[in-house]
Image 1 (cartoon, rainbow, N blue to C red):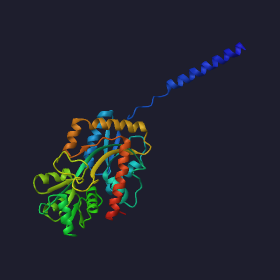
Image 2: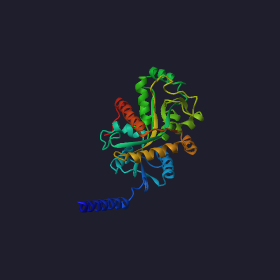
Image 3: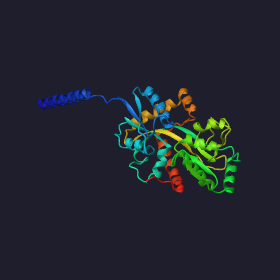
Image 4: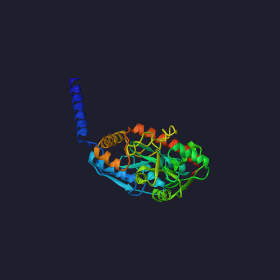
Length: 328
């Protein structure tokens, strides 16, 4: 019996040694990221989405010790880039820098091969850029209430410009039209620049525009600002009331930008990216860079960003349906 016990003990010791050798020999799992990461932008280089994405890519590169490279995939209102990332491997090495346009597109386009809520894992909201309601100075109004009263007194006579059908600028105008109950005409342009040119020239009467592009014209006196569209007043124009303060409670519209990943990306990767982004958004140089764009840092947890995206999809679905806008 003692001989058998000794043999058993020797066999057990041999198995334990073999197991320990296997554990010691197994390659350690590399910490994320251990190779360059792509951040896809659904618009061409040079626009606000691209500029903010490049700021964040630089910060993530410094924080995590690997290159975060911007890859522009414009087209179909940013849907080409969005779909590309939705179909990418959920390993944290292909990410998407999302903007408010994607939330609008979810209802605006009749056929999409992705779902912004179901096919992505939110990482963090990075920034918000306020829109501002501006009018041609020849329009005899100096407040939002006066604009509403004037529009109601002249049904069908006022026109508002946008940078294109389905853009956040267009939808802000449609939301105003819906909430104010006014009969005004939408005139889409191919970008904010030509829209502002005609607004200044008097061909259209008002516009909801991103603050960075319109504010210089307000300062020069070529346009008159009536309100900002965000919940809080803008640091760029602290004396300008919000739409909520001007009689439209709940009116909270901005161009926003953040980072998302394909659904199924490991939670530890999401946490690593979120932590790095939040630390970056605290840096004075990042705040200064955002301030030059009229952007406000917007720090969130992944869960908070996910709830925000769902809320935005629902909000814009209501506005898109009421406006009748549709892209087949």
